[in-house]
Length: 380
Image (tube, rainbow, N blue to C red):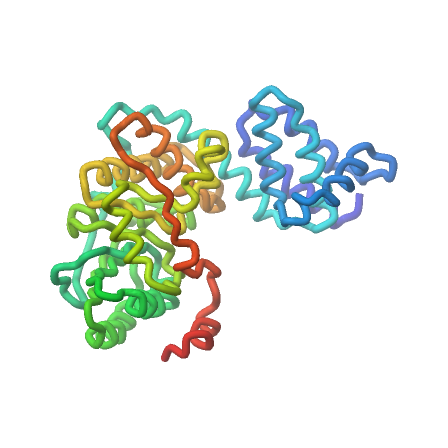
C-alpha cells in the first residue's frame, strides 16, 4: 500500500469506530478491502466499472448515497455488497475526502440516537433545555401587523456575511405582504454588534420589512456545526408563540429569487407543516430520514404547527442530552434533517396536515459567495 493510501485508510479506520457494533458485516466488506491494494482481477472492480457506466452514476450519485443504501440493504436482510463495492471504487478513483465519509457515519449516529429516544405523547422532556439559555432580544425595526415570519439561525460570521443579502431578497419578494425577519445569533461577537448599527440604517429605509434580533448566550455546551444548523429549529416554537403568524424557516444564506409569499398564503389554508419534496420523501422517509430537506420549512401558526415544532426541537435537544462524542456531532450536518423526518413519523397519526412545500424555484440554495450575489443582483 502506498503511503498516501495508508494515510487515507487510517482516517477511515478511525472514523468507523463511531458506527454501532451491529454493523460488523459492513466493516468486513468495506474496510477490509479498503486496507489493501486493488488487484486487476478483483471481482468488485468488474461490478464497480459496470455501475459507474450505469445511468444512475452518470447522474452524480455520491459516495454517501452508495454507503447509506448499502446499510439499508443490510438492515433489510439483503446483500449490501454491491453498494459497498461501488462506494469503495469511488473512494479510490475519485479520492473522496474524509469529510464525506464522516457525514455518512454521523448521520447514522444521530439516527440511532433518535431511534433510541422514546417520547411520551405530548411530554417532551430532555436533559438539555435551550429555553434556559440567556437571550437578549431587540427589534431593529418594530413589527406592525405582520403576515409572515422568515426565521434563521446562525453565528456572527454568517450573520455578517449573509443577513443583509437575505433581507434584500425578502424585500424584493414581499409584494403586498408585511414580513418579519427573525434572526437567532449564537454567542454574538463584538463585530456583529457593529454590523447591527449598519443593518438598522438599511432596514429603516425598507417598507413592510421588520427585523428582530435575538442574541443567544450559552457557555454550557460546545458550539459545533450541528448546533448552528439546528439553531432555527431549536427556537421555532418560541418564535411561533411570539409572532403568532405562519413562519418559513430557511438557511441564512438563502436568497429569495421571486415571491414565495403568495404560495404560502394559499398553503396556510390547507396545511399545518410544509416540507420541500414531502411527497417524494414519503417513499424513503422512514429508512432514509437524512434526505428530508431542511433548507426551507413552513409551519403554520396553530396548535398543530406548534406541536410539530416542539417535537423537532426536543428531538434535536436529545442529541445534546446524550453522551455523544463532540467530534462526532461536529461533523454531522444531518441532525436537523433527521429530526424533521422523525417528527413527521412520530406525529403521523395526529391531526396534523403535512404537505409539499413547492418553492424550489423561488429560493436560491446555491450558497453563492457574497461577491457573486453582489455581481448578480447589483446590490450595494
